[in-house]
Length: 253
Ligand SMILES: Nc1ncnc2c1ncn2[C@@H]1O[C@H](COP(=O)(O)OP(=O)(O)OP(=O)(O)O)[C@@H](O)[C@H]1O
Image 1 (cartoon, rainbow, N blue to C red):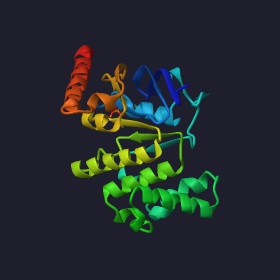
Image 2: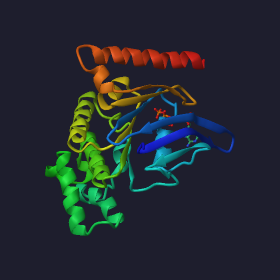
Image 3: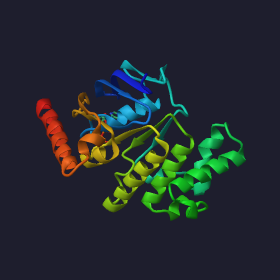
Image 4: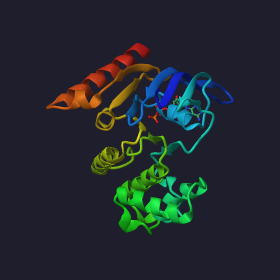
């Protein structure tokens, strides 16, 4: 049984003047410990899909289940990490930010929540700024805090919406490496949205390619690690994915 099953999902926004179809009959499954990437051009509905998996939006068509339970709203089994640096609470320290959802979930005592928060802050290499406030941190550090906060909840799946897109190239690369390092330690499951082909290949073990607006499944690249290992293979895969996405655009016009 898949951890997450997205089956024939159409997502629409209804505004006062129009109905916008963001994704059309999208299906995919995510297994435990997958690094599953949703890849596609701007506007193809990647963020909308993530929002729906997060429980913030209901499908107009189709069904989504996590652990065989239908998704009806947000839950602690799914933690979301966004692109924006301002997702932390500015009046709380790093430690308090990471502890906040642990305390809100009321599953742990304050002492245990603090111990867990400190452990995850250490995992992302931020022990030295545990008492600092968000405005004193760099963009990369803020994203690490957001990742620590999401991971500390030990959700069944982490939902990451272009978490490194606003970082400079060097920091972005470091953050990608750190995420992979964390994954090799804990084998968490992540659904990761990006429009960067290179990032998709670096992060994912499976990549779902979506066609432009409205997003439909174009193809799935399975076993990315195997295909992209070896000299020049990542470059070849990048070109193949580019051609597939480009073909998707050509078909749409
Ligand atoms: N709140 C909203 N109301 C109406 N339409 C929306 C809303 N949010 C998104 N859309 C539309 O839904 C479609 C998909 O948007 P979405 O943000 O999911 O795409 P995306 O693939 O994540 O793009 P990007 O990479 O630029 O973030 C777009 O056409 C967008 O204009």
